[in-house]
Length: 127
Image 1 (tube, rainbow, N blue to C red):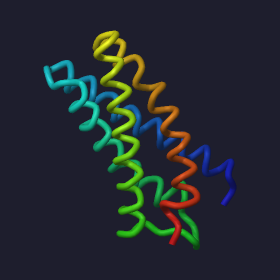
Image 2 (cartoon, rainbow, N blue to C red):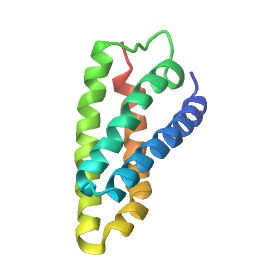
Image 3 (spheres, one colour):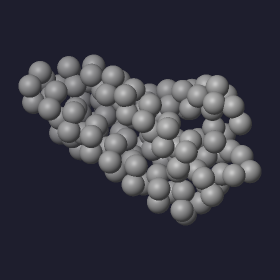
Image 4 (cartoon, one colour):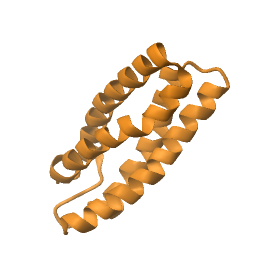
């Protein structure tokens, strides 16, 4: 499977995940949930969708799988990425305010998404 094809699919699925993640975070924080908790809720929604879609479409192949082992690897990566994302978004909220946190979230997630692609390609979905 080509890197170009995987990259294209990962980017498309990532955009769908990000829209879901960002929308949930903005909606929940708009209705009063603290931004850190809203960020985690948004990431959970995006992660569940992304794990399945990337495993079935982006990284599907003879040497890959979508099972318990892959989910546990994904979970470890996701927890680490969520911690980093939440610390960054929370710090931005503390120093610059909620609207800046909303605006900064796409940039934070873009950086983390690049790292997630490499981990997914070479580790998470491998048999």
